[in-house]
Image (cartoon, rainbow over all chains, first blue to last red; front, side):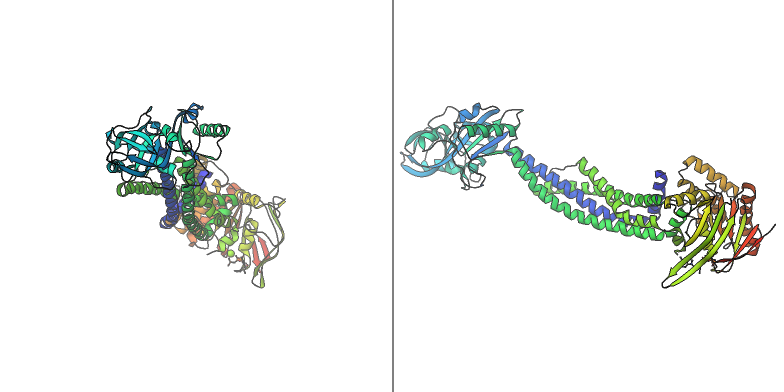
Length: 406
Length: 228
Ligand SMILES: Nc1ncnc2c1ncn2[C@@H]1O[C@H](COP(=O)(O)OP(=O)(O)OP(=O)(O)O)[C@@H](O)[C@H]1O
Ligand SMILES: [Mg+2]
């Protein structure tokens, strides 16, 4: 019987082809907008997360001294990196600390206050994304086991007139220059930025020494920023919790732990808000489409008043008439949905191509099956809901009145 | 027990502040297999009476009994089933569904009774054969003459093998030859298949087919004559 109702319902759609298509277009526009915007949103989210993942690394845990306030210079966390390294699930730890110190060179005599970066060699080997490439122009990079060795930023080396092998003093302590960095005027290293808070820091203006030497050179011990790496197969969140507990046990309070999950969650929330807004706009478009369907259905009911009367006279029950009209409006919704999904996906594919082409930024294309199926179901429902009142009116028509209608 | 009984049936319509009394107390008893003509001037309530008999409309007062069972108080669903199974309607203006073929129109009443498609198609074919339209199954109403359309609607009325055929001026839009064909078909349904046929008409020639002629005037039965 349902099949017959389908036939009876589609008959009108086919008959009034132009009107049906015009009605469907209303739905198509709403669904196209919805699918395109949601797909692009998903793509953007995926892109950002992948980007962050590339920089941050999925298994990295940032341990910062201080509260949640972004931009403030983090306090020092006085804990031995070797201790952290032994904690369960942790495979690598790299602290970084920035201080300003008096740097002196005897020959030629120069003295300057400079940014001294205490860098764990692991920062370079294990957390490359945070410190970036470390291009050395002459000499070598700091390595594990180095003690009173220093690598100079390009400008610093120029001003001090230092070359590998030279000796400098930092806060009165003697260091051997082992390497000079290539000039890198723009890039602010992520790890240095995070450790310095708001202050802009430039590699060219910095001196790098082994982190272990910082305690000797400056007052206080510890580092504002530790990067820890969770082992392969470990749940990062759980390792982070363990670190938190272990730090608390070691008497270190007010610690901020950030994992990739936290960041992507935060970004996801942000994208989510944008998406919700955009989806709201699409919903309005769809509402307009729905009103169009309702209008067409009312017209259709009116046009077919006599026919409804005939169907009732030959034994159609109210439920049958209701079904026929609901099927008709649901079908318009569904067809609009199918076309809208296709257009929406094409539109988002086109947009991500265009973005890739013009903006030098690869926006990932996400074709989400749940989104597609959800949208189709949604459009079907939208059609059904829009058809509800007209179908009810049709089903409640009294046969005699229907016959008298001209 | 008669097939159909009407007791004190009235039907009032409100038009603004005035009331139209389309039927003012009709008592009627109809037996199985009868051919009855309902005559009377325009506006005398013939169509209204036919609609009430066929459960397309309900009386304002009075009782309609079908096989001894009163129809008042029946749910809409029960009334639909009754219309679909007990009655077949034939209208002056045919009232065929324009988008359906002759076959589709004859199948329509069977759809609502849940008859299977193959069975439906077969029966529609038979019925169209009986009204001499076996070769016009695939034609749509606008491809058929008036007389042919009315024969399709007779086939449709027979679809669920009802006991009662109600025809409201079935020949009103036809030339006399087509009208005669239609009336001959209705007469045969009564004679050969025992159907009760109630025909509303202005035309004495049509009424001549009837065994009983009921004349209405101002919503009341003016006279009843038995013939043959
Ligand atoms: N829905 C309605 N609303 C108001 N008045 C109605 C309605 N239906 C019928 N009437 C009135 O009831 C009276 C009887 O109408 P009905 O259609 O039964 O007459 P009829 O005998 O069939 O006439 P005709 O031969 O012209 O078809 C008429 O006066 C008509 O105007
Ligand atoms: Mg009439």
